[in-house]
Image (tube, rainbow, N blue to C red; front, side, top):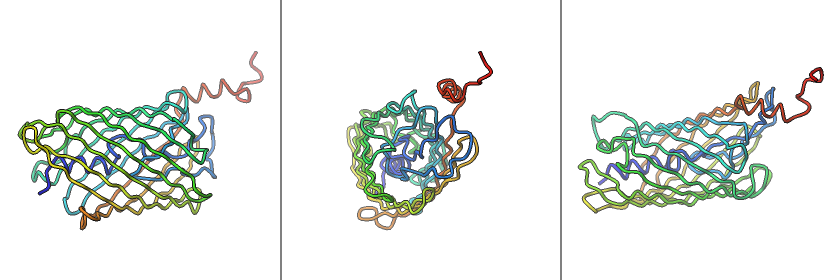
Length: 304
């Protein structure tokens, strides 16, 4: 039997490795850039697995991702905004979600839970062979749990992404994380504590700077509320091939569409789905002005 809350958490793990994980951040483009960076490559590349590269100062990213599972007929759409905090070390992001659970026929689509994320660049960056960027997330129960669109209670989540460049055209990303919701609710308002864990890995091939192929593997162990103080644990395992490519336009705008095909194996054998991904990354105004004022080459020589 598929319980609605385990389905909800499985979808959220899949689409954003729980919500808002700034997962698909592209190569930072300098805020002072005024022309397309023809050689700028996509550097992290994964849809289900979180990379370990924070946004560069002065560059923000808007990430849309839609996933539909064919057997369960459930889907999730997420919109994530990522903002650096003046340095590479600190990054904030927020994820908003819309979802539809196939476990509730006739319930329709609606607002899901919301995530606020902080990530710290502990080691390395997108320019190094090895990088670590742990994340902490606050989960807010903005979705209607009676229709399987949310947890019914606030929670915490952690994730530890590690990125390793193993060769000139090959990069791997590794994830380990956990989610804790002390007072989750089911559709009957019965409450219980639920704990989820996730492990994931992706390998990315970069045949060209702006074209990437990837193979991702994600394992999830999640719980759903089945009664007062009672839960059931469900295991999910997905393998997902995918591709994405970049368009570098004027004024530092980079557009990255992508497609992934998650396939259930083991406990999820027979399940399959589609992921549609779209990212917009660009400098933002006051950071661009700050970069110009800090760069002597941008100062008007006629000004005294």
